[in-house]
Length: 310
Length: 252
Image (cartoon, rainbow over all chains, first blue to last red; front, side, top):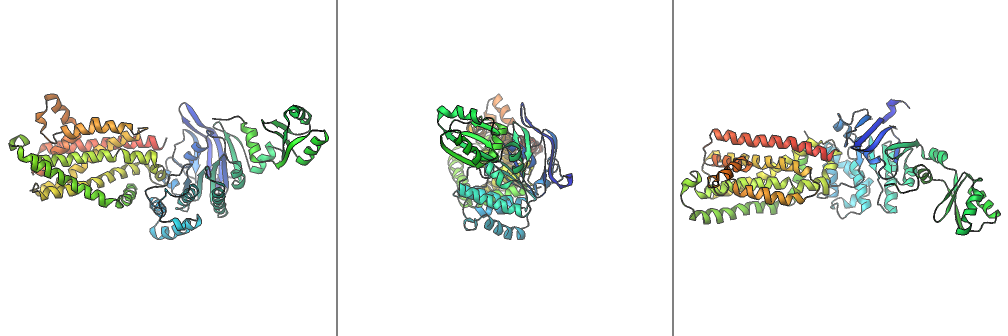
């Protein structure tokens, strides 16, 4: 990758809140037009990184360029070309849906004659045309999120930063948000997304980095990472406790990895059905068995561990 | 300079409720001037004690300056706390090209607009009561805006460094109310003990009240410059502290 393609580039980027280090010397590049993800458990440093890119939080060290500019000295110029969807909605609850967009258009110096039709389009895009004169408060969580997304598009940005865009939404609302984000991606808008939902990362991201404890642990496309850190398939077996240890011992050598969870045993294998057949051939009785494709979640848990990180 | 956009936002919100608040801002001075000025004023004798003013004028000018200080302080407490913590409007504004400076100056400008909406009707009521008798008196309006805005800058700086709103109760009880009563508002500070007089002379409201009275009776003097200087300096210091506190809070 050449640096001229990079919409964002970071070298040894660091953020300290003394004595705590939130982001510890990370390097990454985001190319124009791609959907780039920051994956990681809570407290891994994703939001701090996003806030530095958004020119909200000045870096404590390292280098950061956003759209070819310095987010500290050229904050207003950078901010004029990006859209931000923060983790918690910060819509103006004293204004209506439409006024929220109108006000934001003024903050961004969008000329009135451009703003009017653009707001109509955006309300239509996020399916809020009918609610345009409603106050913000009575809107559902999904609607507020969509309005926040519409607001982030008011300046027709080159780059959109989305910090956990679907956290707390119900499945329908999530799918609607994903659909809109997917369409933005189709239009060539660069998306940077943080999430701890693996399905979200798998659906939306072309490339991602996994962060853990303020550092980047790995990087690649979702497929890459699955190939690198997991097997093609995972067999999940529920089995009586008495034979559980025997099963684990028996399968240890014939699959890539065996993981014992409180309620089930996971067997990482290239062919789940064949593995299950061999379990049955060896005379084990399973309560239930499920063969599934390996997901980013397997990768994520392999890398960051299963224990609760707080 | 994008500060005016913050003013524009507040104006849209205010426009919805202006009828009630306008009514209240006119009603309050009418009530106070009638009750205190006419009622109490008729009992108070001896113009000499009030620096050559009759008590009605003395009271009205003190009340105008004190109300503006109180409003300026109030506008810098809960409404700003709400936009930092509860509604996070500033976070949203900072994602746009607006800077912390734009936000702070915009809010202070808005405090000025709020004060003008209060001071102008108040002044009109005073005129209706026959208290205003020189064109110089109009200068009392910018003077009270300066009082309210300079207090607002300092209090906004404090607000930005608070985690909760508990301190506001103490601010009003221990700072605003004593200032309101003891800065030469309702009686001349000469009536205070020696130390009280010294403390009063350090407060912004004392300078504001003096300034307003000098303009009202059309007799500015060298001390006018001193009063203006004090308030302008306070506004300057408060603005520097305020922008710094906002920066620290909003862009950690």
